[in-house]
Image (cartoon, rainbow, N blue to C red; front, side, top):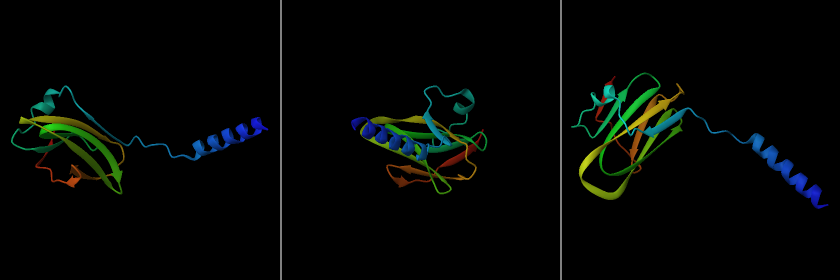
Amino acid sequence: MKKFVLLGLMSLLMLGACNAKTPTKSLMIHELTVVPDNIQQKIEANDKIQLLYEDDSTYYLVYYSKGNVLASIAAEENSQVIQLKEGSEQRKVAQPYVYKIITKDPELYTIDLRINGESTPIDRVTSI
């Protein structure tokens, strides 16, 4: 009897896994530890937030902060929502955080930048 219960439970788990939605790989963001020269040359140190775009699917976000920053990205309707969360520990001088963003979904044509949950405008948008 235990074998049948176990077999039934395994079957249900397999069916549930088949119906589960796989996460989309249409959005990716990661911090660059080494910034390419062509990106470095376009960064404006006077702007706290800058977006550099290479093409319709590759962007670079530059954010100056005195705290540690964690980044994430998600899709909401037709927007790419970029979340930056600053840590409470603060340095004396702001340092640049550079993120590479890859968007493979043409339906996500707007960017909503949120810093600590609050929508924030981008100071400068530059073509590479």
